[in-house]
Structure formats: C-alpha cells, structure tokens
Image (cartoon, rainbow, N blue to C red; front, side):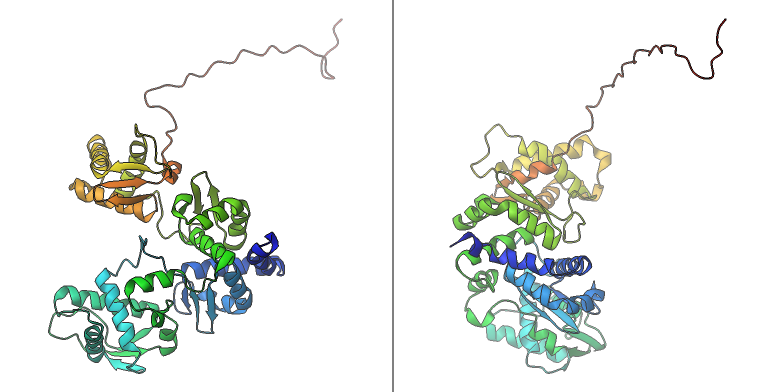
Amino acid sequence: MSTATRQRGSAAAVAVLDGLSDIDAANVVRCARTLLRRPLLRVDSHDGDLLPLVFRHRVALQELFSSLLGYRLVVQRKFARLYKSGPGPQVTRGEQSLTPRGYAYLALSMAALIGVGRQVLLSRLVAEVRAAAVEAGIEVSDGLPDRRALTAALRHLVALGVITETEGSVAPWTGEAPSEALITVDTDLLGHLLAGPVGEVETPDELITASASTGMVGGERGVEHAVRRRLVEDPVVLHADLPEAQRVWLQRNHKRESLLLERCFGLVAEVRLEGVAVTDPEEYLTDLGFPGMGTVARVALLSLPELLHQEEEPRADGRTEVSRLRVREVCAELVESYPSAWSKQATEDVDELVDGVLELLAALSLAVQQDEGTWLISPAAHRWVPDPDASPGRESVEETPEPVVQTPSWSLFDEEST
C-alpha cells in the first residue's frame, strides 16, 4: 500500500478545514470538540446552544469524523448523535450515577421503552422492565438496592432527554410501588441511542468486542482509525498496550498524527519512547482533572515519586511494579508527616485512602492492576512527579555586584574650566 493511500484519511480531514475560512474552520473544530465530549447533543442539554452551528457545518463534521476516526455522525434540527466506539474490556470510567446493576437496568429500560409507545405510566414501565429482565434471564428483586439501581437508570434516561416527566417524577420509592407518574418517550431519540450492534451478537462479551470496533474498516485504514481513537479517547497510550500493527503504525506516523490532533481537535500530544500522552490545554475534553484539590488527588500526586523510585529496573514496557502494601506505606507516611494537610474524613481509614488513590491512578491510565496485590505504574506518571522550587532549609546567598566606576566625560552642560 502506497504512502499516499495510507494517508488519504488525514489528507481528507485537512482538506475539509483548508477549504473553509479561518472562522468557519475554527467553528468546525469547536463543534468537533463538543461532540467528542457530548456524543448526544440536544438543544436543552449542556452546550446545546452549539447545535445550530453543528447543523450548519454538519457536512464538514461528518467528513472529519468519518475520515479520521471512522465515526458516524447524525445531525438533525433537535439533536446530533456521534456514534463513538465502545471502550472495550479495559474501561476504567463510566457514568458515576450508575453501578453495574444500574447499567443492567438501563439496558432493560431501553428494551422496555421500545414497545410502550409515546406515553406510559411509570408503574407500567417498571413492570415492563421487570418482564424484560425475566425474558433475558436476569434475576431482579424488589429490594432497596434494585429500586435504587432502577431509579438511577431512569433518571439517566431523563437526563439524556429520552424520557420526560410529563406529570409526576421518577424518584426512589419506599412502598410496594413507585409514586405514579406519566412518562413521555422521545422515540426518535431512543432509536439513535444505541451505538453497538446489539442484533449481531449473542453474548455480553461479544457485544463489548463488537462495540469497540463499531464502524471500523479493515486493513491499514482500520489500524489508522483504531490508533486515533485511542489517542483521542485515552489520556495515555503506551506502545506496549497496542497490537503489533498499531504500534508500528503509531511509531512511524507519530509526528504527523500530533499535528493532526492539534489541528482538528485542539489536542496536544507528548511523544515519548514508551508511548504518547495526549492533553487538552483548555481542559474541556478532560473529564477527570489531575492534579486535583482533594485529599485523594493530592496524596496520589505526592506518592508518585516514592512509587516510581524502585531499586529494580522498570519492566520492558516501562511500567514500574509496586505492591499494594508499598502504596499503603507511602500513603500512611504522607498522612503521618503532614497531619494538618488532609481531610480527617478521607484519612481516618488508610486502606480506604489507598483504594481511592489506586482507583484515581487507574482512571487516569497511570496505573493498572496486575493481580490482587500488585499494581503497575505507567511511565507517563513521571510527567506528574512534583518538582520542588528549592530544597527546604537552604538560604540563597546573592553576591553583591562590584561597583561600576564611571569614566568622566564632557557634555554640552559642563562648564569649561579655566
């Protein structure tokens, strides 16, 4: 395959922007960033005021996402839907309001909504959800945890605009049945909600695998799309984590891809020997900021120098192996050394603090669990190692400069001597 053929995707994307005025090109990039952050954009949602601009530049945006990432973009007057690929089995983040049980109820609720029409009573919808669970072979109960999970799933659908509380509201219930409410269903939006090929798979594992490659073509173009998706969606991409074909492609094209990410999405790529770290200077596409102000975030930041400093050499992939016990020792030492610097509630149980630190590092792609007692710290963590301004206890001594002796000279204002 020729170089020109391999680069046709990036060339098409650049051509889209080059064919626009500077203002229109900047607006296309702004809309693209918004859609990456909010794949389902509605008029009354966050950043919904940009929907008219997305509609205006829909052709350019569709070409941009298709050529660079292999994503499909549907734009209508009332909403825009970017069909992104799934995260695959290594997901570390998700909707904070939903537990795994909540996600199960979300899927069941969407299945139930397909056949209820445009309006339905909440009690009937709950009954349909439970019937869908029985049909799918999923065991559900009427206990408090299941009620909360179902309520969280329905509240998430309300937030997405798929269902609207016409009368009453969807709220947790304590009795045998929820308080009655009339629900209106946006069937058009519901039809565009699912991105994965549900009808083509038979097991959850197959769905996860298929969703991660949704819309991706094969061959060299598929490698190109797969790598760019990782760069856009993940803060850290290590060469060791990529299949051989993707690793070779990224190492060969990293300079061009860095320029492309900045031009089309406003992202900055830091290329290192072990891989690529991608950041957003405006932090709009950063869903999890680091460093942070909370106790867990600050302890995680300050623990990195000790965790990365090991007597053993790093692994071949650049990761540093540490035990959970070592992480606990470092966290406990920080808590004891600076007792007034932390929240008492966050540090009263050191084991919970350690769990929070490791979960945060994992969500940032800076750590991955190898087994129950061992974690691997990413080489990208070195960029966050604090660098003190000066060593404590040392006083800087400034040398007094030698006085400058001025040589006398004549001027127009001097009196002539006699």
